[in-house]
Image (cartoon, rainbow, N blue to C red; front, side, top):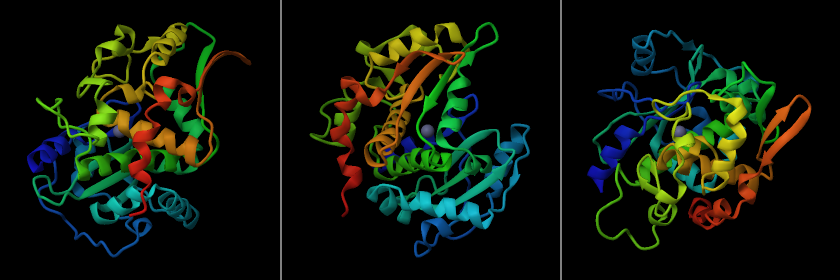
Length: 319
Ligand SMILES: [Zn+2]
């Protein structure tokens, strides 16, 4: 199990980038500041580590530390308080720090602090701009990075209410931390032989996935395999957006991004589940032509998607 977790964690440096491809980073060698489990989660804001800053510099970018205002600190505290119970417990013992950056090219970056050690620690860096965006604004921007709109008046949007975008992104990234710390989803391949009976990994992954980033045969779509969220994917003409979402409708995945890999599937699914079922927010993907809606899809109303609700219960156990 430990080896499996180590391998998983190397795969587990995750982003919701503007091109929205997962990034990998070289793990830092040694923690450059200590982990303090007695500090509240919202008080773990720390300057970005040298490792994270170097990662961006190596890619030709120069994000800078963002100091939180009092109002922003309140948003951070509110978001941590809104996380499911399992997230709060696991982050309490595995999240070393969070940091905020200006001019960060992607939305968030979760990195391992001490790969190879039995008790994994994580840092998460966030683009500070998301603290001033609402979740619909941010999700619509992110979804638009898949589509070429130059030849059409069609536009894709996601209505997910007006809670702070940081809560959505924190839920997503924190789910990766929970996944990594508990080894929920498999490493890179379905284990040979029997899965654990009634494990979340078995129930959530099996049937939906043939491999880490290969969907099960029943949900194959060459159109969806070629979108910009996928490694090597390309912008899709927005005139094909309806066709793409019709293909998504035939799958158990809650979003285009969730179809990237089983790690992203779990993170997206838990996040949208929490927003819709616990926080009572909408989640509707629409295509508009001017002021007119020409397509709408609510993934959580889909039977294929909602029949996975039952696997979310373990995130809400209070002990
Ligand atoms: Zn992710």
